[in-house]
Length: 142
Figure 1: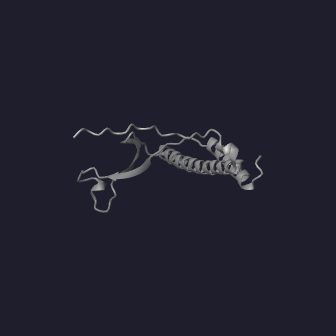
Figure 2: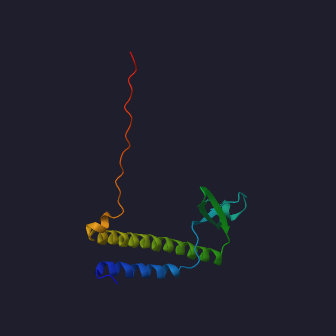
Figure 3: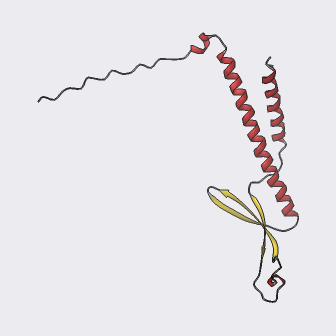
């Protein structure tokens, strides 16, 4: 275990995030929208001016390879289940973002520790690239 308390704290945070990621349940990306529509029949309740219309009808949209995919979600328990899956996806994205952030801090700390190592170790493996000599341009006869 590293002696540096900050480094130790970052390692603990990383392990906590990994455990939280392992507990992520069913998830899906996208947006769930409920829409109300008017059927156009003059005698229907939706024809009234103050009526929102029929619905809501639920649709889930998300991007797949630069195309928008839309899927109809049936009303009832499927809507609540889809909302929970969308929330779980948002949680997964946030946990992943935090894990990358912590990992980046750990990598920076490792680089800083290596920088403090003897100069001899830092110089190993480095090579100097020498430039190739170019031939002098020949002048054209006048």
